[in-house]
Length: 169
Image 1 (tube, helix red, strand yellow):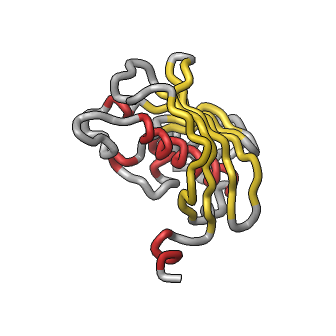
Image 2: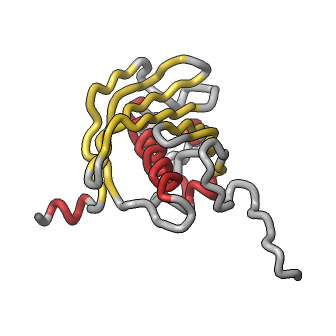
């Protein structure tokens, strides 16, 4: 093998240019959720303030967020939280891990359907960073399917801590 760098496998590379698509393997390597709990399938595009992802895990009977054989629309908040985490990983770049954080709250959430598992089309998850500093971030988010708004709201993220660390403070 020559000393020339080999191109990265699709969806697994280190290219962090805005707009560059990423697949499920790339996503799973950068968020703490693994296996079926990694809900997102692909990052379609992103820039410094926005990200757009897709998922089809809402149709998976083994989706760990299902309860009573169904996946309620409020599970969409977790889809949005994962998109926000992926956005953080993209912004951190190839050489730096993203800051650890957790979902602090979801506000102004509006549900336009009762459930997600009965939708045949893929979910599109969009998040836009509205504000932030070294400790907290505020994002607006939406989930759509087939051009139809399913869920929207705002999410705050607390950086540099874990929920367990805050509970003991």
